[in-house]
Image (cartoon, helix red, strand yellow):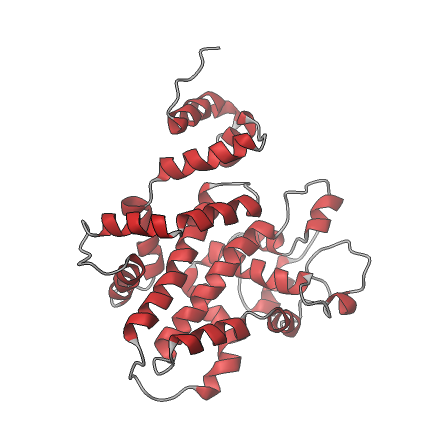
Amino acid sequence: MDWNAAAVETKINLTFKHPDLLFLALSHPSYGQQINQPEQNYERLIFLGDEILHLAIADYLYHHCPYLKVTNYKGLVTKLTEPERLTKTWLHLGLGDDYPFMTLKEERPMLAQRLHNPFEAGFRALVGAIHGDRGYPQTRNWLIKHLIAPLLARHLKNTTERAELDLQQRFFGNALLKALLADWLYHHLNAVEPKYLSRFHRNLSSKEQLQQYKAKSLELGNRGAGFKTFLIQTYLAEAENNRNPYATVYDWLNREILETDEILREAIAVLLRDQKPQKWIIRNVLGYASKDYQLGRERFYEILEEEMPTT
């Protein structure tokens, strides 16, 4: 399909390094079906974009609304992520007439009246694409400009006094952890459908996992705080001298906290139970090209901690 990335970039006031990621964010599942590439749609990006969106809002509230209680934070998150608001923002950006690409029979103005529609989904996918292409700081700033500040900026108070520091940090830390985990899953489980990503995400953010994360963090300078609190304190400390603390904390979480092979082993076991072929997992999930298939096969059995068959 011939399309003009620059036309979209002008509307959103952002240039993509990888226009193919922008194209994916604009591709409704019906379009993927039409071109016989059903996996080429924005659903995986929605999974990532949802968590980045929540993180950006939590980030803004923590830094600009210290006087509010966490119950107020939660209410504002709900308000800012309402499908109607995301739809209006998409239309305000001038994207509604032509995007996302789709082949639905219903007219676009009628679709926009639905609570859950391709436009609010497209917005969430676009957030994921911007994050994947430009990183978290630029995604946060873009969201502040187009979604958050238009609602909240005029109501801000000129005070730095915090209503409830511990709860605010835990709230911010929870959003950060969920975003980091979604980011990790999106990039480490290539081509895996969102229903699986959401399932793995719930497991990785469970109470049991949080206890394990905390146990590891106690060896890394944590003096007994809950893991979410320790995580956000680490992030805030990095932010003092680092323009992209998100990337630094992501690398730290990946290196020091997450058990990569264990996560992959559990994910592969689920995919195998659901009849995903071994060859598909090696090529699409582990990312081995056909010429490196044997290496991928060795890695596959290494992850599963099984002896590789000789035939």
